[in-house]
Image (tube, rainbow, N blue to C red):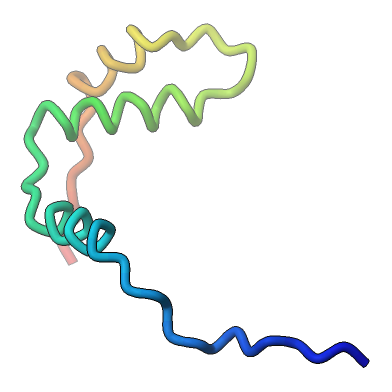
Length: 71
């Protein structure tokens, strides 16, 4: 049988990746970024062949609000 290398080795150091991850952790999402992300989610989850466009998805984000129900 062929010897297999262990997959449980420590990952190599990647300082560039670590720096990017740290920047991402500290980034505060703006309202515009959140709105764009919501519109992308709506458009990406629209059924194939539907009449939903990127513009209508973006417009719906401003009309619809998600609220938490009281516990």
